[in-house]
Amino acid sequence: MLLLVLGASQARAGVVRIDITRRDDFITHERLIARVYFALDPNAPVNRDIADIAAAPRNAEGLVEYASDLLFFKPKDAARAKGTVFLEAVNRGRDQSLGLMSDAHTTNLAPESWDLGDRFLLEQGFTVAFLGWQFDVEAGEGLGFTAPQAPVEGLVRASYVDPGIGRRPPGFLLQYCVTTPGRESAVLTFRERLTDAPVALARNTWRFTEDGCGILVAPAERAGVYEAVYTAKGSPVAGLGLAALRDFASYLKFGGPVTTLRETPALGQRIVGFGYSQSGRLLREFVRDGFNRDERGRQDRKSTRLNSS
Image (cartoon, rainbow, N blue to C red; front, top):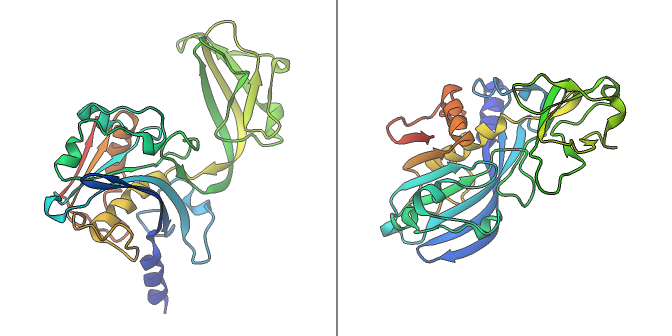
């Protein structure tokens, strides 16, 4: 009986739903803007090292749920399809590969406004996908990621760089909100350069916002670095961004119960991963921490490549 329960839980893990919000004709390809919903088993050996996964909320089946924004270009002609998916882990919600390789540019960060440049990847017959993995990308600022909140408490060090140009805000937002008791013990420092020693600001010159998720402070006379140290409660399980890339790549290669994207003959063969700058470092961590194997341990070393800069 125990083996049957574990087997059923594993079958429901991975990509559980894909909601397509927009379809566009792109001559050789169909462009899809979608939201991909995932679930994983927090007790599976490949998932146990994700920070705070044990404390993450679970659904009725005991699985942890999370979701990513997706931009997907699907070949319309099976005869021209290359059989390879070019998958970019987007950096801060937007692509960088197209600008580097195809002279692409955007008028704004909305996925439907991305210009593919000379369309090199599409003309070569690639399926092209961009997946969000960062929980701190604001809505409308590109492809984002929704991670569950773990009810953990701990010390946070948050930095904000004031560039000293343009219209300067009266403070900055915090990714982790301060606890009520932590307001009094919090410290905010300022320094002009990273190599300078931080100097604590007087407590009456700054304060937390009412919801505890931001700091209000008079703009400094010169550009510099603010750094807040405080106690926070509630942490997004950010490591699930790695699992999203893993589980989406696994879905493209091996399929699953969701058939939304699987009718394309180009899928099920090869995945080429791309990351640049921060996303390049992410892919190195992806391989180092074993995310290039899915929950079932499947990996095709000959056909899966991870390119990073």
